Structures are given as structure tokens and as C-alpha cells.
Amino acid sequence: MGRYAGPVCRLCRRVGEKLFLKGERCFTPRCAIERRRTPPGNQSGRRRRVSDHGIQLREKQKARYIYGIMEGQFRRYMSQAFKRPGVTGQYLLELLERRLDNAVYRLGFAESRRQARQLVLHGHFTVNGRKTNIPSYMLRPGDVIAWKESHKQRDFFKALTEDIPKRPVPSWLDLDTNNMTGNVSSVPAEEDLESAIDTRLIVEFYSR
Image (cartoon, rainbow, N blue to C red; front, side, top):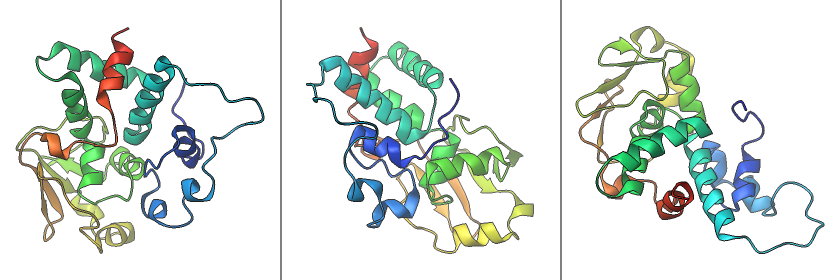
């Protein structure tokens, strides 16, 4: 199955809460959750009680939707998390946060993770001076994320960076607004991880 390319607002309605997949629009009255909270599809039938498995599945899907990754990728991250000693769910979110596309979003260089993924795929960023167009590239402390110099004169660069910083930058990243670069100062701490995800349910889903 390929990557989902339909309306992302349907994904928010499917899980019943805002996942902030469309950037600034999610903070306006035009947000799909504000206008229509019912799940997509035909709702004429009698609603049944969601099983424990269904609750765990929905939480896993929510994490996938938020970070914009496919099932195979998510399973690999989960496998790495199971092999590491410590809190499995916390390490899972740490891996997801350290993705290059997520760091580009966290630094404010993109309005959404979906847009950040597209910018990375199109080769707009370098890591430690080298062009990197792999959204899943795993960042490490000391890495420097920068816009490609030849792209800084383009209109889209000016449009995306004129309001920097748009949102608070997490403590594991340092933003240099003069040079429009980001430095990975450490691994993400627990308080920097996505609080909207209940990792306990995800770990239970894959522990079956």
C-alpha cells in the first residue's frame, strides 16, 4: 500500500482530534475538526463499543499520521525501541523526533511535517554541509541543519522564514535566525516529546 495522498483533514476526523497536519489552518475556524467532528464515511449504522485492540490501533495510527510515516517504517522504529533497555515508548518517540523532516518542522522552516518532508525530498537542506534529501535521516547531537545556499535567494525561502520563529523551538535544537541554521544540541528529552501520543497503548499493540 502506498503513502496516503488524500485530504489530511480526514485523518484528524478519523481519530477524533486535531493532529495539526495542515499548519496554520489548524488554528483557524476552517479546521475540519471545528466544522465537523464526525468520522468520515457512512455513519448511519449503530455505533459499537470500541475494543481494547481498536483503541490501541487508533493510537498507533494517530502516531503514524502525526509524523507522516508508513507502517513498515513505524514497525522498524518499534523494533529498535523494543531492543533498547529503558522505556520503550519514550525511545520510540525519540526516534521519531530525530527524523530530519521533523527537525525541519520543529525549527519552523516548514508549516507542517508534510511540507517539511517535501522540502527535504526536493533537496533544500544540508546536514553538516552535505545535501541530504532523505526525510527519515536520523540526526545526532552535533549535526547542523542548513538551507542550501543556492536556495536562499528564492521566493519560497523568504516566505517560509520571514516569521521565524513561528513556534517555540524545543530545547534539543538551537535555532540561528541570522544564518537560518539549526544545531542538534542533544537527544530529545522527555518534555520535548509529542505529549498527544499515548505510547503505552502503542507498545501494548505491538506486544500482542
